[in-house]
Figure 1 (tube, rainbow, N blue to C red):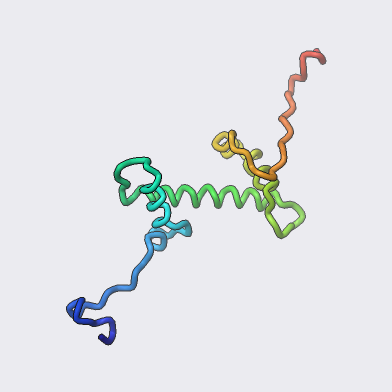
Figure 2 (spheres, one colour; figure 1 turned 90 degrees about the vertical axis):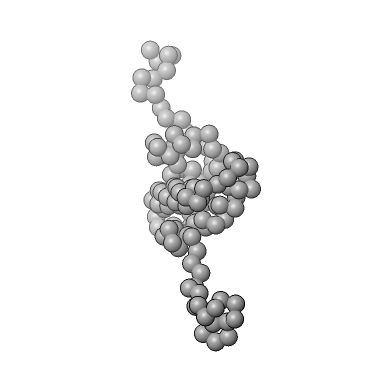
Length: 123
């Protein structure tokens, strides 16, 4: 019973468990994503690589949004508020296209871009 040896594992020492997130080098929980994919009835079976890929994509998008939101916090403010997230997403062309229909609570509205040609009244 010493040094990880018992009657049940026939003298073999088991390696310490390593999470799938750490194996993939991710911060997002791969196991939890896998569980949510299975519970969500998206498909009958979920492959082993699918939750790793999805966790990596979510981690990348989160890091991108947080970096842009950090840049949106001017004057070295210490806190990112929903308004900063909104500004970051709407000012980035690709994120705005991806998340165009998403509403951020407490994000306030964004002014519509002004038309360079002007309105019909001005012409």
